[in-house]
Length: 221
Image (cartoon, rainbow, N blue to C red; front, side, top):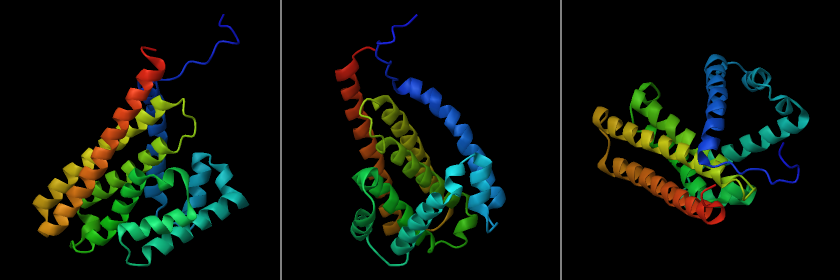
């Protein structure tokens, strides 16, 4: 029997990977619900009940949702560059949301909305859908990787970064596919790929830094 005073084992990135696979199944359920109820005016409440997120159904959850929606409206309603977007966000939110890598992903999400305006029937272009979806996934995984306040959970951070990297690589594939299917302006395509490479390189660098820190702390554990 383990000693009650024995320190709890720290998960490495592979143990976190197994845990996150379980979470992926929950994500798939959420996406199925979102697709089913996308046009329902009570979509958010229905999905919250189906997912068991009852905390989002109370007054506090409603107030949080209203604040998030107002922030997004403020960002989207004006034609702002990335630096202006970062300043607007920094006034309202802190922590992982202020991390340069997360902001780069968020700025790309907004930039894509403007970029797709130039593409005919963008919502029905498979490569546009794939590109947009994977950029969104990358941003979500970066948020998860950067939001942990427990400095001991380096393994979790790395596992989420790996998932963000995979999403970025899928987005890069979609960008190449889009360029083949649709006549894009050279400047627009160059800007898109530059942004994706910037995020990819940032993720790789951060993964390396966290792995070095893991080895420094835990060695071969």
